[in-house]
Image 1 (spheres, each protein chain N blue to C red):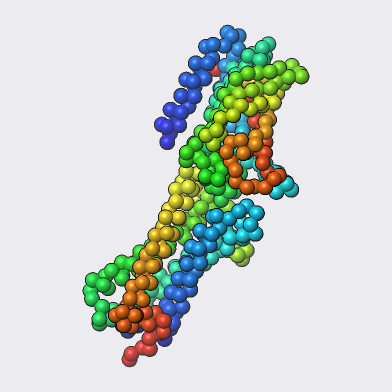
Image 2 (tube, rainbow over the protein chains, first blue to last red):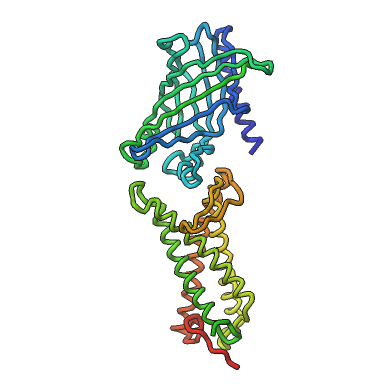
Length: 197
Length: 185
C-alpha cells in the first residue's frame, strides 16, 4: 500500500513537473500541504431540500504554480483518492464508495487539471477552468478561486493559500442514484495551502 | 425436559434452534431487501436499524447456544444413522455456527467502522472496538455478503437433510428437534 501510494505520488509529481517547464520562469511552484493537512476538499449537498450534508475527501495530493504578478499563468493539478470519502457515517460512506455513487473499485482516483485561468473582478480572485474527472467521467468545470494570502511561514518556508468553490451536477458524472430533486447538485469547497518548492 | 440428554434435545435447545433459524432467515431476506431500497422508501432507515438490532440478538443467542451446547450432553446419533452421515451432519452444524458468528461479527465491524456504536433497539449499544479504513470495511462487507449466501446454502442443505430423514428415511431426526425428549432414567 505504502509503495503504491508513493508511486502514485511520484507519478503525480512527474506529470505536474513536466508542465512546469513550459511555464514562464517567474512562476513559483508549490506543493499542496496535505502532509500538514493545511488543505481540504469538502463537498456539500442538500438533504431532501431541508438541510445541508457535508463531507470531504481525506486523501489527495497535488501541486500548483503561482505568480502574483501574473495570476492567469497559474496552474494546478490535484489527484484525489476517492476511497477516502468521509461523511462521518460508516454505512453512508460505504454506500458512497459503491456502485451507486463513486465506484471507487473501478475509479479509485478523481483529478483536476487546470487548463486556463481567467482574471476575476479583484486582484486576488480568478476563475480556474480545467478538466475534472470523477467516476470515470471527465468534464470541464470552472472553479471560482480567491487567494487568501501568501508569505513566509515561521519555519523557514514560503506559503500561498487559496480557496475555491464550484458546483457539479451529479448526473454529469454519471451518478444517477435518486436522491431527490433538491439533491442533484453538489457543491465543492476547496482550501489549498501550498509550500514553495 | 429443559436440558439435553444422550437420548434427545431439551426444551431450551429446541427453542433456541428455531428462534435463531427464523431470525437468520428473516435477517437474510431483510438484508437483501434493504440493499435495493429507494432513498425515499420508508424502510430506507428502518431496515438497517432493525437489521443491526436483530443481528446483535442473533450474536447474543448464538453465544448462549454455544455455551448451552458445550455444557450439555450431546444426544447420541439415532441407531439408524451411519457414521459417515453423522460426521457430515456434524460438519454442517459446525459450519452453521462458524458462518453465523463470522456474519454477525463482520456486520458489527461494518456498523462500527467509524467509531459509532452498534445500537440494539435504542435499549443499549455495543461500542466500537476497532475502526476500519475504507478498503477494509468494503472487504468485510464482501465477507458479510458472501458468507450470508453461503450460510443460506448450508442451511438449505441442513433443512433438506432433516426433511429427507423425516419423510424418506422416516426416522426421528426432525422430531427430536421439534419435541423435547423425556429423560430416560
